[in-house]
Amino acid sequence: MNHLFSAVFEGFYALQWTHFVMYLIGGILIFLAVKKEYEPMLLLPIGFGAILVNLPLSTVWEFDGAPGVLQILFTSGILTELFPVLIFVAVGAMIDFTPLLKMPIMIFFGAAAQFGIFATICGVLFVAPYIPQLASMNSGDLLKLAASVGIIGAADGPTSIFVASKFARDYLGPISVAAYSYMSLVPIIQPPIIRLLTTKSERKIKMTYHDADVSKIVKILFPILITILAGIIAPISVPLVGLLMFGNLIRECGVLERLSLSAQNELASLVTLLLGITIGSTMRAEAFLTPVTLLILLMGLVAFVFDTAGGVLFAKFLNLFLKTKINPMIGAAGISAFPMSARVIHRMAQEEDFQTFILMQAVSANVSGQLGSIMAGGIVLALVPVLVQLFL
Image (cartoon, rainbow, N blue to C red; front, side):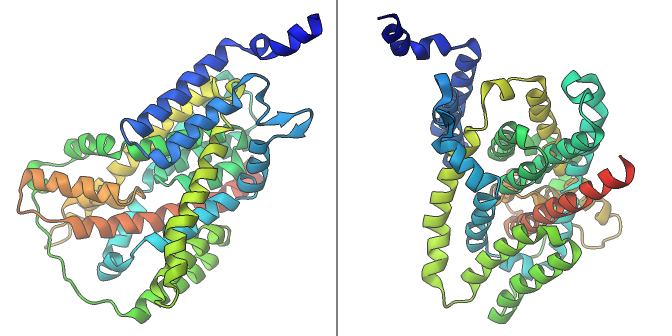
């Protein structure tokens, strides 16, 4: 009878207060997804996955010594980088690079807006000695963790997951949550920073948009040449850039419309669903409720702030030498949160002067941010192991 009683109430005996904290965190993520509509396709599965994995005995992760369903998904989809790269196929099929091809100069804003990545890496290394859990890490692992946190500033969830899966698997949960949460908060995070760094007259600067045609052959050659260039400059970035460009080639070739639509819809929806709930499964209480998680959330925000500031300040720097001035708010659209950031920038310009139309320029910078974030991720993946071998 005692054994029967224990079996029935086994789940109650296994409950700890940390489980309830994780239920609350999962509930908050679901609330933000449903009520506020903040990245609902990802925050809702992540929130529910966090609840699932923190149920007593965590049978969705491991049962009777055998991997549970979520551990199988994690091993086959995250550790192999399968889910992130499939997401890039879908994203590539969704992106229209035409605005960037019409204004190639905007590619520089996609690069400048990655400044926050490297500033955040330095910030994590600076505060690490004051956090016991990080102070005890060896220098190589600490640098890899710092790089993974810095990539949050790319405002590109799949890139953050891809880098974290290679450098900081133990912190994949908080890094992913921070990346997608801050992406959804772009309309709240960016405007105060932009207003702080620009004057009213700068925000009213009008820009001319030349609506030149882009030939089909250019649209087809662009993803092919970018893939080759990325493979030469940063070979380790090819899984990211190559699959993104493959998706875009499917879109632009004009003969694979059904595949393009499938990549944009069915593939994107299915992989996003599996990716979200699998990321949520990494949020086990014992690993998530640590001071390092708070640091990741804080430094992720710092990365977004510095990325936005870097793009704006780069535009202001260019204006020192240009006769035809650039609206410096365009620089903030160089992050990878597409198309949300472009819309935020254009709305801010309209609020200052309803005759200021900079949507297409902002979209061009925003599209370049997609490429910039992936290239930055590839560069980090290539440089960090070299730095670990040379100096640590």
